[in-house]
Amino acid sequence: MRSSLKVISRCRPNDKYLLVTATKSEFDGFTAMVGDGINDAPALMKADVGFCMQSGSNVSMQSSDIIVVTNNFGPIVNAFIWGRNVFENIQSFIKFQITGALTVLVLLFFCTVVGNELIFSNP
Image 1 (cartoon, rainbow, N blue to C red):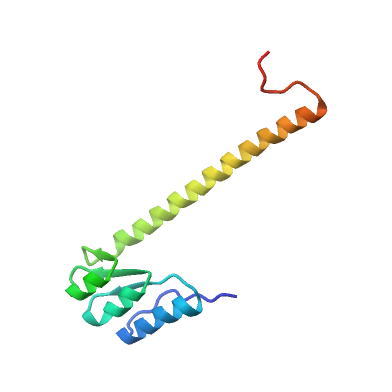
Image 2 (cartoon, helix red, strand yellow; image 1 turned 90 degrees about the vertical axis):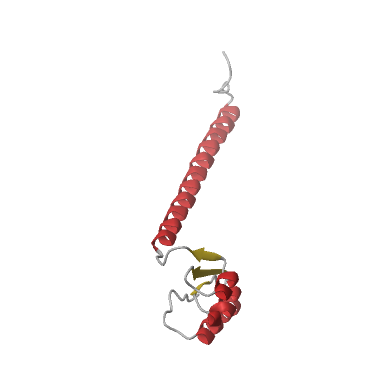
């Protein structure tokens, strides 16, 4: 069983870097890191996605992938929710299309085997 680490807060920058490297190497996991100081830059660079507040240092902003303009993570959470919703809708649409196509193929095959006229042919 694969363990997962959800959120760790209030830790030292060295611990952040160790957690990111251990998660990526041992568990082959996806990591996101939040930092705003110069000492957070190595962990931000090592993580798959690095978040930095605009009020953070220039070094951390250059090391991060996403700079949050406001000091609020609400828009990021909303973006993740919308992204997951779009992904689930695309999956549902693909399942629907595959189901319809397979149904048509089975009907055509059945009509051909039985010897009846094709159901989609012109009269």
